[in-house]
Image (tube, rainbow, N blue to C red):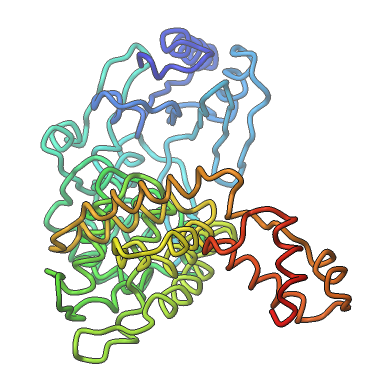
Length: 450
C-alpha cells in the first residue's frame, strides 16, 4: 500500500493475524469488495471487508481483535456483522449470507448461504472479487475482466440488484465518477424504471446526500451529473438542477442553463462547497427567465432555492450559509470592469468575507463555462483585491462602535445609530475618511446632518 499505509499493522502482519484468527476457530475467511478492487487498481483502500465461510463471523472478529490488541468488536447481531477498529482502518466481518428485502426497506432479512450466493447479492462484479489471506485473487463472477475493461456490471439482474438496495443506483454513478468506469448497457434503463424507490422511507435523505457529496468531490463530477440525468435520477434528488434543462441563454453562453452548469462544475477544483455553489449558481434562472435571454435577480432567487435544496438534503447549516452566499454574490466578479473604483473592490472583499477565494474561483469557472472573450479581467480584479486587502490600516474592518456614536451625538439606542455607523463605514471604504477612529469622531462632529 506504499506511502498510503497508516501507522499500525502492515499488510502482511494484518493478513497473518486474520489467518490465525480464522484457523484457530476452524473457519475460512476471505477479503472481499473495495479493498481487493482498489488493490488491483493501485488505489489506497484502508478498510477491509471479511466474509467468513464455515464459521461464526462474530467469533472470528473477537479472536482477531484480541490478537491485534484492538478494542472489542462492535457487533450487529441481527445482521451477523462485527467491526474491529485498528489505527487508521476499519475491519468488518460478516458470515457468508443471502439477503431478502421488504419493498419499503433496504434493511435485509438474512440467512446463511454459500460463498457464491453471498457474492451474487453484492452490488457490482468489481466489488465481488475475493482475496485469500495469502494474498491470492479469486474471481468467481468475472469481476477482474470488468475491472480491466472499466465496466460496472451487477452480479444479478440489475432490476433485482437495484430493487434490493436502491442506493446502489447512486453508488454505480459514484463509482463511475470516481474510477472513470462505464455502466453496463442494462444499468441505466433499470435505474430509470426503479427511480421512484430512491426516496424515503426506503433510502434516507442522509444516505442520498452522502453519495452526492462523494460524486461532487470525485475526479469527474460532470460525468456524475450527466449519468444522474440520463438515469432519470437527477429530477428525483436534485429537481432544482433538472429544471435548468432546456432553459435557453443568449450572449456569450454556448449551452442552455443545465449544460452551462455542468461545465461550470467541471471547471472547479475538488472543494465540495465550491462545487455545490457552481451546481446551484444559476438555479434561479428558470424562475426568472423573461424569454429574451435575461434573468433579472436570478442570483437572489437562486440563493433561496439553493438554501431550500440543501436544507432538504440536510447539509450542515454552515455549509448552507457558505453556498448561499456564493450563489448570491456569483455575478459580482463576472460583472467586474476596470472602471470600478477602489471602493467597489473593497465592497466585494467585505461582502465576500472569508469566502472571497471561493467566490473568485466560482467566477473563473462561470466564465470558463462560456465563450466570454476576456477571462483575464479576473486576474486584474484579483490584483486589486490583493491590494485593498493589504492596506494598513485596513478600510475593511469596523472602526467605530455604536456606543461611540451615541456619545458623540448625544443620542440613545435606536435605528439612527446603525444608519450612522453604516454611512461612516461606507465613507471609509470609499476613501473619503481616513481609516482611523479619531477621524471618524472628528467627521461626526463636523457633519451634524450625517
